[in-house]
Length: 175
Image (tube, rainbow, N blue to C red; front, side, top):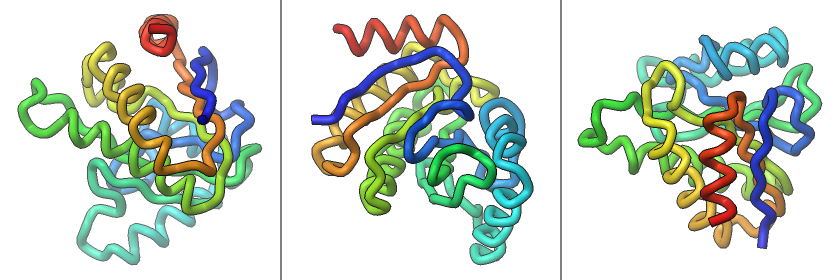
């Protein structure tokens, strides 16, 4: 079974096969984790994301709850898996299912690519307003439920930028 851990730090500096980007549906970069990853990866990431978006024509480059994989540009990882989390509207608009799907689809893409390790940020908890405790519980549950379908993945790291998220994940993983 895969090792699941939590660390506090900067996801762009974590040494794993793939980091997950909490992207927007255009894949063109933004604020928070998305902006940090795009800045650290450099212009080749934006170019690759533009190609994905162009292939989708009038659709979202990556719809909410879905995931796509790209190269990593200047980052010290093999790939970036971009996933679009839901905006929190109180929980009645399929937000829990969509958030769980982000983690599931990301792990399955890692499996398809033969990746052994993956790092996740706290998806949807920034400007998308998802309550941190609910997001952490959904993330841990989705990862634990999906790992049997992703046997290539041997290590999952939840990377928390702040102490509050770190404490939430630590408590969930120890409990």
